[in-house]
Length: 234
Image 1 (cartoon, helix red, strand yellow):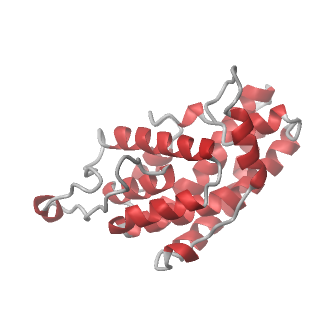
Image 2 (cartoon, one colour):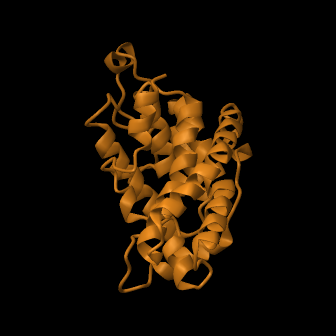
């Protein structure tokens, strides 16, 4: 495992479209639920222990078992009741795979060949016809192609679940970026614990993987999708 490779995958500057998503923060700010640094810290912590845990578990399992991508994608779809969030997740998955294919030997989903297997690629299962992979599933598959393991995939997922909204908070609320990054530093041990917990579930059936929900994120996403003017895509 290469720590430098993990940093590349988790880097917010990766051209995979993450900067266009606030992780639900824009809707929360508009609703008045997030107003200052303290509120942002609570939002990030809540997101880490719900959406972050689910994301990390599916990324870790996709990394360990790329032959189960279709099954994992279905499982994540069932855990995403908001059509707007499903659309955003698949858009991010598509963007991530496009960026990753410029950097690592990522096989097309469902099209791995015997020669690809001999070259070291695991067989990918094809998602349902006409569907693109959810972002956490794509993240796990990319992590495997980059030579990372389930724990590293889970770390990247958990870390990304809070860094995106944190960056958005600076833009939406005009907050001190030093104060916001201090929040991320305090959450780092929790990210590690969430990642370790998620990576310990890679042998579980899909139905037994974490399914922690955040109803306000789903409600906010549906409202956010109707706005004519917005700073972020989600």
